Length: 121
Length: 102
Image (cartoon, rainbow over all chains, first blue to last red; front, side, top):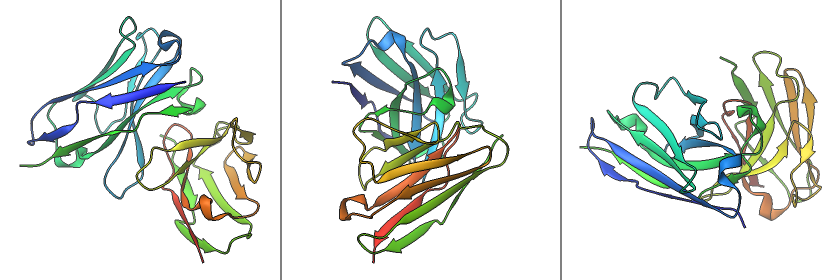
């Protein structure tokens, strides 16, 4: 069955960096577009970044552009999110999610359990 | 950027009631609209894709309709296990609707 397992979250000081990972299994990872989506405590969902199946097409939300970098390793069935210059407002549960199609509007049919990132001094 | 406006932000209904949530896009998005259910402490779950298509395994009491800028999500007969927050999504997500039992 499809499984997405995030890791790498934790407590980091403002201005610090963190790298999230998402291990995928149960499907052909290299065939699917993937995204990171976050949810601040008690708030709604915010799409963060999106990467095509080959890694050649990448999009970012304006709120993270220039600070976050999405990448993938299809040989390792893994998705990554490098987060730099972290701010308090980046505090959230970060989910990786699979897209069934090539458009962001295709939606997200499988989600991981999430990993909590807390930015605080 | 296309904005998604979801309403109401919360609602309270009785078991067996028909529940309707609306989502309005700031411009025409055809039928590119998805609906999710999120229970407390859990990841969201895709219920409806492309405005009206039921994801595999989702109960038929859930339905979606609409195209262009105006969309509707309906639970035909609210069940206790439907207590959750529901989100619409095009590129970005709507603000969410928290559904509670009266």
